[in-house]
Structures are given as C-alpha cells and as structure tokens.
Length: 419
Image (cartoon, rainbow, N blue to C red):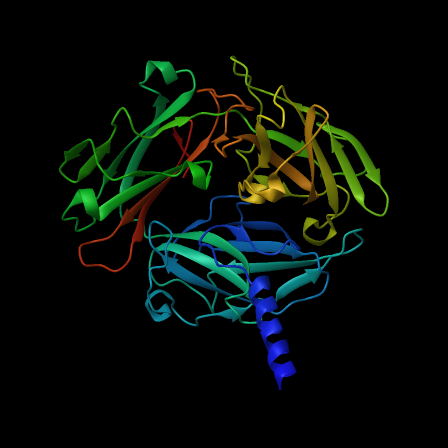
C-alpha cells in the first residue's frame, strides 16, 4: 500500500511538472511543436481579426516533430480587452459545442525531419463565436485543458465604430527623426455610450507586437459622437528599422543572406554575419514587418514537403557579454525574449542556431542589459521613415455589462488605410 501511494505521488508530481500554466497570449508549450501559423484564411501571416458572422475564417497550422499523431482537442474562450478571462459561461459566447477534436493532419513526405502537420479552420460547424471580442484559442492534449499545447489570440469584430487614423512625424522635435505619431478619431454614433472616458478603450500595436501595445481612453476632444485622440504626448512610437531577413525556400542553392548550406543527416544553414545597424541615416530595405512565410522551391507542397534546418545566426557588435545579451525575435517565435531566443557569446561575437522550417523569415535583435532592460533600437537603429503596420482596436463595455466587445479595427501603414 505504501509503495502504491509513493508511486501515485511520484506520478502526480511528474504530471504537474510536465503541465504548463496557461498564458492568455500567443504561446507554444512544447518544444516539439514548430512553425505555428495563425492568420485569416487566404491572407497568410495576416493579423487574426475576422468579422462576426461574416463567413470569414482563420486557420491554425503547426507541425509536431514527434512524428506520430496525437489526440488534440481545442476550444476558444472569450476574454476582456486586457486579455483576462471574461468568466462567462461558454453558452454565452459559443453558438454550439464547447470543444472539438483536431482531426485534420498529414504526415511529412521525403523530408529529413519527420513531422505531422496539423490544420484547423475557425469558425466551423462545431466551434463558432456568438459575440464580438477577444478570444483565446486553446489547443490541448487528451481533452485536458491543464495540458496546453498552443494558445493563440483571435480577434472577432462587431464593426460598430467608424475610425479615421493617420501617421505623422513626432511633434517632439527631439524625436522627429525617429518616431511615428498616431492620431485618430472615433465615431460611435451606432452605440449607446454614456461615458466615452470609460465605455470605450482603444489599443494600438506596432506590427502586432504585444510589447508595443498602448492604451488610449482619454480623448483630447469630444465633438458630438466623435472622439478625437491627438494629444502631443501619446501614441508616439519609435519607428525602429526595417527587419532583417533570410530566405531558405531552397536548400539546394544559396540565396541572399545565405553563406553556406550543408545537407547530411540534417540540414544546416549558415547565415552571413549580421552587424550593428544603429546608424544615423535610413536605408530602405524591403521587409515583411516581422512576419514569416512557410514555403519551398524544392518540392510542391510546403505544408508537408518543406524540410527543417538548423539555421545559424552570427552577430558582430562592439558589445560584450559584460554589457548584456542580444536576443533574436520575430513573428516566428512570438517575439519572445527567453532562453530559446538568447544568443551565446564566443570570442567577440554572439551566435545561436534555430531549428526552422523552409521559408522566408523576418527577424530583429533586441539588446538586454545586465539589469534586464530590453532595448529594441540599440542594435537595429531608429528612423521615422521605417515602414510599419499599426493595428488599432476599439473596445466597448456599456455600464453594467460583463464583457468587452471589439467594435472597431483599422490597419495602418505609413498613413494609408489598408483595410
């Protein structure tokens, strides 16, 4: 009996260690899960926002490198504007069932790295949102939500607010050469707004990066049903620089930024050395605003025939390990500054290798000093001319309501409306 109790305690302990605490953000909870993509169907790598009951859908795609199929389930949960659970019953925000099994998968073909490719399209006949707002898509194993595999943020829009926005140089003369200022106006004529200072909140992100998210809830002016946000001290973003990039669509021939490709039992790609780009002048360079695209020129179907490679990054800078550490970030790793994105130091250079599927990748370096302060422009530079996407999201919660609705959305790029 004592042995049974001991084994049971060991099992419970190991299970609790294996489980990961759920985070209401874009997360991957297992190292074997790779190449997670989540975007609007037909718009690869796009921001995952869809109109409620419009027929628009988003697709989740990912690879499991363990090579055999798993019992994956999924659901979505309504969240407030701050990405906390709304604590609603699923019947209040889902039209039909609470969860479903992920059944669409295919095995890799003729690749050195074996994997299973999964896909999921939402909304579908089983899982569909009933109300507008933020939703967290949760994929988990064996119907156990305490065993998450992937989480992704989904934005469901009930378009009830008109928006106008523009990008201008910073009104602060010291920042005019580096910063991009967002001014915008909301028209809430279609809503019953009693207090515009509390009923409406607007968030702005640069290139869908969570760390850039800013809140605007105090309009500078009110003109009838129009709220004007143009305070000189708010929504003033560093422009940064165009993203670095590399192309591994072919592992047979070198492309731009590729130094060497080695094909043996595993694929290895050595990128050309990167250098500090903190220069006073701006140089245009085409990029994808931090996104990545899975693709291959070596076969037909990138979903199951694109291979994986160890991609080696080398950064030459006048900084040393005594000053801090650089990290590599992009949409491909959810902009995470963690152990997986940290570069190692060796004899005057920083380096790392990442196991990535064939495709086109944008990336940037973030410098983190010895007291853990991240600097996003120290290694990359900072220019007003840099081309960036900005996502503007408007949330509405009337007095007495229990949840926030997403009632307005606009995508900006260099002052042009792209939606």
